[in-house]
Length: 289
Ligand code: MG
Image (tube, rainbow, N blue to C red; front, side, top):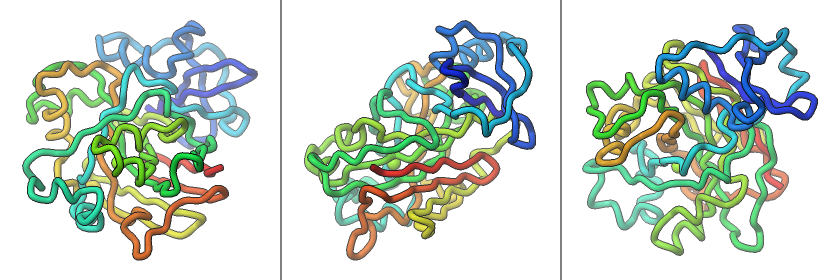
């Protein structure tokens, strides 16, 4: 299934996207439930619940506004830094210089605040008064279904509800300034997400491809097989002593090709359009303003 959150006639709804991607069928949820996007559905299905009935006829996808599938995740998004070798190399002198010696032992994990999530085609606000080094990071994000603590690698994939696309937008100067990365990663609108969640029974996140274009120019292209820490390892790591809940999001890191890694660096400016595509999952595209 592809579960999307959308707005139609001013109301937020949650629905299932058709196989051809042209229509969406809204599901019976209360307005309060729909306002949290797919979260209620994920919680219910994770506990063995069944899918709600359709609340009306399918509507054309072109006639609705897609929101982030989780418009405000239940808590901070878990994010992984330095998870593709080529990306580790391109930023080895900057973002990862303090971690170079620890490569391959433990993943770098930081968080983004839930309020920075925006829809798959929403504008991203460039905080030009705070940063002059805005960068993109195309990423596959894992959405947790069944929660748990100390989840073993061997069973970790059974805790995956599905997958979505995110752009882990980053203010590099702010990221570097504070030692911890959360501030440089959490500006308002810094996490475009979507266009939907595809469930794990229909999509293999371990064998797909993450690509990114800026104004039509391809910048990133990496297979998820190249992750340093694979998805089961990330779930095992993040759940060590910390309970994961249905709807938690883990952004799995970005391939090589970010603006900071270029010589000279190429940061985003107002007017730029960044497109992130994951094979067999979907595409998000956001204008920076
Ligand atoms: Mg990232």
